[in-house]
Image (cartoon, each protein chain N blue to C red):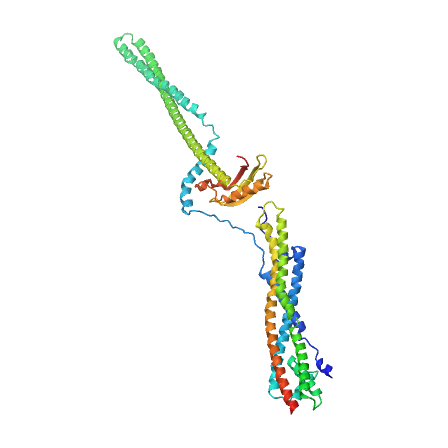
Amino acid sequence: MNTTVTQDMSFLHLITSASLPVQLVMLILIMISFLSWWHIFRKLFVVRSEINKTDEFEDIFWRGADLNSLYQRATSSRYESGSLERIFAAGFGEFNKHPAGTDTEAVMESTRRAMRATYQREMDRLESHLSFLATVGSVSPYVGLLGTVWGIMNSFRSLSSVAQATIAHVAPGIAEALIATAMGLFAAIPAVVAYNRYATATDRLATRFESFMEELSNVLQRRSIR
Amino acid sequence: MSINVLHFHSYSEPKKFLSGALALLMHIMFIAMMVFGLSWKNQPPEGMIVDLWSELPKPVQEPVTSREPSKAIPPSEPLKPKPIEPPKPEVPIKPESSKQTTSPKEITPPIKKPDIELKQKPEPIKEIKPNLEDLKKKEIEERLKKIEAQKKEQEQKQELEKKQALEKQKEIEKQKELAAQKQKEQEAKARRDAEARHAAAQQVAARNQIAGEIAKYKAMILAKIRSRIVMPPDLPGNPVVEFKVTLLPGGDILDVKLSKSSGYSAFDSAVERAIFLSKPLPLPPDPALFNEFRNLNITVHYRE
């Protein structure tokens, strides 16, 4: 009963006094959390710039700009093109490679293939690291829980040697252990939110790309027949 | 050319390092929030003394009755060491002796006064004698002179005697006064002693009553605790466990400390649990007696 009421329950003290497995779990979680936040910010910038560039290119394209000048702009190294521009460049470049008088069907087929390949590459780039965010969102609570379970296990084991069990004996251990869960949740919650946001954004971009591909192939087909 | 077109643009990642810095900033903010904003230092409860009174009017009414015995107790203690009985024999003896001494003195003055009167009577007889015998005038004159001288001497003697008598009377009166004073003092002393004895007796009775009350409530506390103990079965011998229990007014338990373990932790913890279960402990309604219960030593035997 004569346990001291005052226990140093500061955050840092709790972390440093935790057992080694719990500390390991905490370290892993901090790294995971850092990586996931890094990817969240990277994806944020990538997706935002992609949406802006797509809007910009669609605007220019449908205003009736010259396809050759658009191609020149897209392929110039000084200009940083967007995904949609690259798809257009791949398709238009493939279309122009065929000499005049070749079978329209064959030309359109190869053009569509080239656009699809670029589209898939672009989608892969946009969707990269999204799976990492999904993994972090689903796994890091469990990792944190593992640390918590381990910490609570230890604190209860140490309790068995004490004749008079009080909450004061268990509380510091549980508090230490619960920090692991807190860290896991801290990593998981933003990761899940970001994953959902970016997945939706890339899906919408993908539908825009696909519809643009169909529309471009129509435009090129009309051009080849003429 | 086609390869050139496809891979013309390297996938340049925009703001790669900025996002890294932002992630770092995010974590620094989070940790700072945890460390400073959410300081988990639980401070010791200083000055958290709360008196829980089951009824409010009690402390107002009862101290009046309770303080009387409590006030009566302290004077009794200094009085007690004084031997109460020794003054008793002195009291009856002294007044008697003083009365005996004073009574003879009172008798003596009336005896002496008649002596003076008798001596005064011969004077007229001697005066008549010279009138009857004119012949022997000289002799008579001489005699008269002698008689006068004698008279004078007698008068002087009488005056002296009177003075002495007066002085004696004064002395006697003084003695009487002294005796009376002594008597008064002795009587007062006797009265005081008697009062003291009476008060002491009353205090003893009150203390006996208080002690009885305390014993009664201590027995009640023990009984209540005993009734709540779930005894661990089959302990060898008769282990004894001692607890120091700190109570709050109203019977709540502030602290229970194991002062002497029985050696069987199951028994110790059973008794401790029982002590906590039996709160509020029964306390006498008189708050003045609470000091007797503030720190209780509770001893529990495994077998009664």
